[in-house]
Image (cartoon, rainbow, N blue to C red; front, top):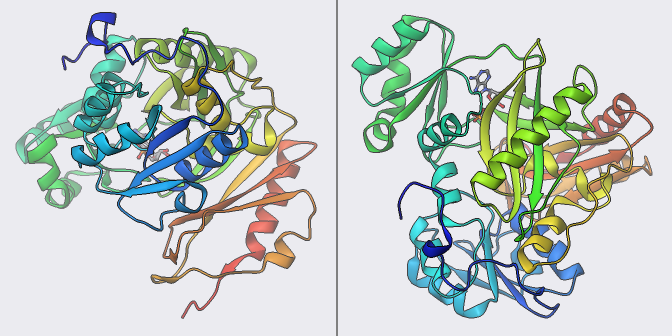
Length: 407
Ligand code: AMP
């Protein structure tokens, strides 16, 4: 498929969900059965839809809420055909899948995001070219394939820099911060395999005043709704906290600029479902796009209890052709991630009594069989009277939890 937005002629008859809604009782196929697949499945089941998951792990988090799990790798095109035969409409919860799977399903059933959106977002270099074409601001960047190119581009851009794999990195994995010439050789050596295969993204480090995400949902008729911005905090590349609606320094003008940008990008990607745009907010109020995720996102988990319609339900509604729900926040909401700690071992969570002693705390546990250091295991949400208070209560509850049998 060409690297341009699809036209009607590119599509199979099955593609656009702009006819009457699929009725409850229909089956939604989901590639990926991690926590996002699990929460999509829970939202789908509440509406009366059935879920078939494709995942390499038969006991993945979504397995216990799905009708069926097709156990297969994310590049197994034959298994994708099996998923297509088992569902009425399909989607995926991660970008690290073979586009051939999407193509295979698209020949049989509607699947969203479409292949173009997958291609533009699974490769960070393609994503940067797409963003440049869309006029979306990003950090100054260069494509790098060799150590010589890295040295030349680093000299041109100046430090500090970030070097990221184009394909396959997430949660801060497979990227390096470069502060001086001496950092180049070891960083390149660590990522050399990726550099040769896919290229690397080298970009200026951005001095932001806040990190936010803009989440929009778009239906098959091209109507979009936008959630209040979430303000995010990361630790070593992994999301630890979100607060929404984003408190100062995020202003109404920043929110409307972010919504306009995210809606435009969703339209250009021909997206049906949820799009997340990770943004850096600069001191002058301007926005810099860090990354796109054509899907529900960790920074939108607050919407389960904190918004009228959750991001998960919204994605399901868009897929099956139901009207989108309200994105209004029910109050200032904080979400903190429950990460794993210690070596890999069976997951047993302790401290629940104390964590839930605060009756405003909602706990989500993803039912991952094993815990290990920094693995995303669950999250907690508090809807409070103000953002700081909600965040303090969520943090307090988190601090009361622990993973047992840590040596
Ligand atoms: P990423 O894997 O690109 O989503 O990056 C993870 C986190 O690293 C981001 O959420 C930022 O906190 C930080 N980061 C990534 N790229 C940059 C950059 N160019 N400038 C400053 N911080 C960055």
